[in-house]
Length: 96
Image (cartoon, rainbow, N blue to C red; front, side, top):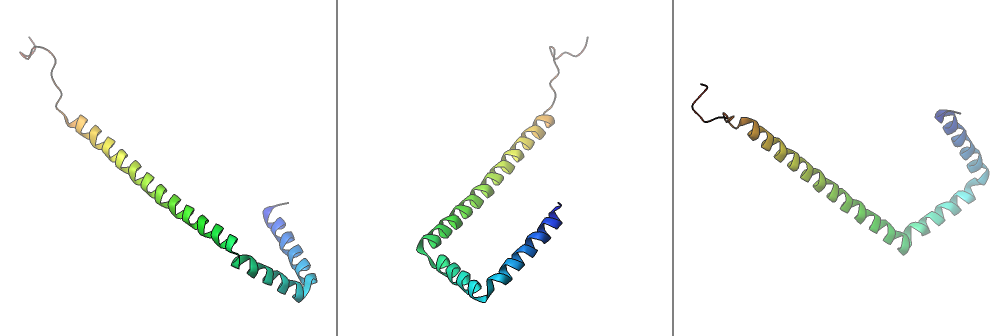
């Protein structure tokens, strides 16, 4: 069974089960969800999750910036190394 077929079957089953549950069950679920959302424990967990994600994003951005700076330094060093004059080996009197 492909993804699209599985998705269609899942949506169809959800629709049938939801229609059988009726309006009262929908209201019960909605009321329960509202209580869960207002729960101090859930709010605290959501807040902490948001903080961790923000810290992670900040850390990732700074890590990328450090990586780019390091790569830039390496490129500069290699360019300067290639620009340095080649020293002639020997005693400096030319070939003789």
